[in-house]
Length: 213
Ligand code: DX5
Ligand code: ZN
Image 1 (cartoon, protein in one colour):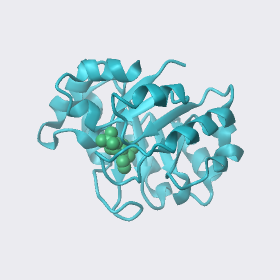
Image 2 (cartoon, rainbow, N blue to C red; image 1 turned 90 degrees about the vertical axis):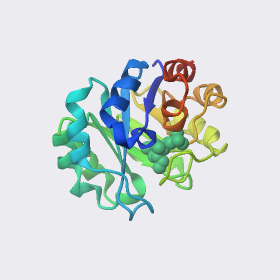
Image 3 (cartoon, rainbow, N blue to C red; image 1 turned 180 degrees about the vertical axis):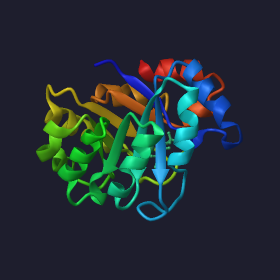
């Protein structure tokens, strides 16, 4: 699997969102990461399905929706209708994860699960055959611009082992920078989510290319 780069819209200039989406698509990104925060699962608010729907006609990028929300089952339909290609829910917010994954699949959308830095990677093991994506957080979710937690590299390696030969995307989110990207790819990540490093780069095209390696 070649490495994908997924810019996180959280770091975009909110006064010019349409232009920002075109700018990072032109920079070579094929996936747009959309961080949805409810002020409850994480202590911050971001944006909702209406904004995602408004952006959908502007771009061909794949929409990778990261739901940092309590009761994600209440939002699946809305984000599917808004044009999500993939929906990732937090394992910590999903006491019946397999039901949720089945609901996502029924919407003809790819299924992801995300883990906060403190949640054992091992917990994904029983679900691996029903997953398209695993998203490991390398910061505590809730804000962009934080520092990468180095222990995430061991967690990536462990996750890579668990995934084995399955066609599951292994994504990493938080504090991805040009200098730690080689180690992150080496540890087995196949998707690098990055807000600050791409949106604040003087040359986003070069940032995307360097993150891909
Ligand atoms: C954190 C979000 C991340 C974040 C990444 O809660 O899930 O996607 O925007 O931002 P950077 O790359 O700035 O750490
Ligand atoms: Zn995210």
